[in-house]
Image 1: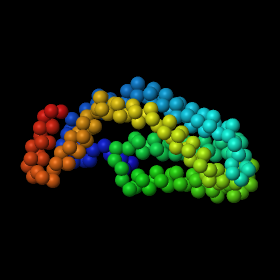
Image 2 (image 1 turned 180 degrees about the horizontal axis):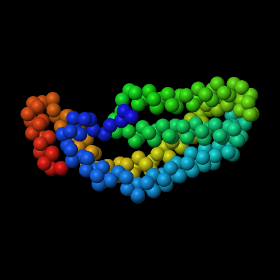
Image 3 (image 1 turned 30 degrees about the vertical axis):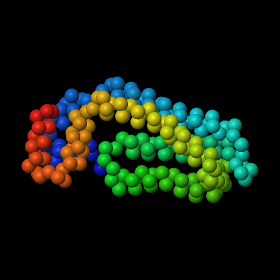
Length: 200
């Protein structure tokens, strides 16, 4: 809700940006199919990375089995929660303290739930809090999250560099102008905006 690619002032300054919606730039069929493939890829990595890395692994230091159905399920679900939240982070245009709080709480609520729920011997799900004390859990979490998001981040960077949308171009122009703005007056700034407007 609070994400915005450009603020209201710039949207009014560059009405040409609304052509993106009229041209249907961001809602192409190929984007839909690529997103679907990416989601399948992320699902496969979220399951098979931890499964292949941990299914034949040793027991934890206290002698408990860390490779059972419930243990692997807990690890996979934790990874899925983290990947989903990091996916949102990489999709945002603007970052505020509110975004950081919401994403942080989304991840922490999962771990708090497991910590509380694992204290009860329900459906053989007991003591799973100990999984988070193993270094192998955190290593698998980091490796899996990176493996899940590398294709999306790479594709996003490639498209941004070589096939930018109009709003990407305006954002970069604004960043360049604002970096040197402290030594310019407002008249020069307005003249530069007019030049950019003519280029678009």
